[in-house]
Every structure is written in structure tokens, then in C-alpha cells.
Image (tube, rainbow, N blue to C red; front, top):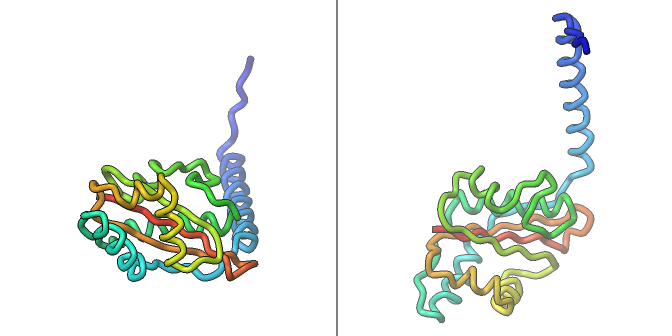
Length: 165
């Protein structure tokens, strides 16, 4: 079997055309993946989480910009994809996303989707054993809460709460 080597000019042409194709495909995807409003919601999150945790003899959680950024990324991903899940379409699971955001140690994530405001959101999470366990985990001292609205239905939000040490 003989391997054919590319000339330098051929290699440069492949790199240029490949790069141009990638830019065009990303540009095309961006218009399809528009989302509505996105926001961190640490203020309301702190209010509800402080109340929930104090009722169970736990100290309050403090808002953290790194965790909020991670929550905002996940909320935005879910709004763009139209799917509520912890893994992104690029195969990034929760642990990988936390590592990419520089979050070390124990962490957890609650997600939700719907037209609810924070009061209903936290009530639903408290009525779900896994979500409740995350919010009442004594190892956690920080949190980030964010949402992203669907572009096509601005009444619906994708929520993400990231908890960490």
C-alpha cells in the first residue's frame, strides 16, 4: 500500500476550505439556535434557598458567579435544544461541564422547564426527592441559579440550579 503525500499548497487549500466550511456551518446554526432572554437569578434563589435550608437547620447558601455562569450555560443549552437534560448535545455531561467551568469538588444540578416563577420552581424541587436532597445537602455552601426563555414561547423558561462547596 502506497501513501500519497499532499503538497504544501494542497494542505493549505484543505485547511482554508475546511475552516471556511466550519465558520459557515456555525453561522448557520447560530440563527437556528436563537434563544430568548437569559438571566442569572441569584437574588430570588437566595431568598428561597435560605428559607428552605433554615427550616431544616442548615446554613444559607451564598450566590457564586462561577456557579451562576455554569447554570446559565446549561439553561441556555436547554433552551436552544428544546430538551431538558443534564447532558449537552455535544456529549458534555455534568461532571465535564463543572470541570470546564473550574468547579472542583462536590457539586449537584437541578433543572426544570415550564412557565413557573421561582416560588413554584422551588416548591416543585422540594417535592422531588432527588432535587430536595441536592438543596438540603450539608456539603454545599454556594449556588448559582439561572434561566433561559425559549425564543418561540417566551412564557416558558429552562431553569438550572448548580450547587457546590
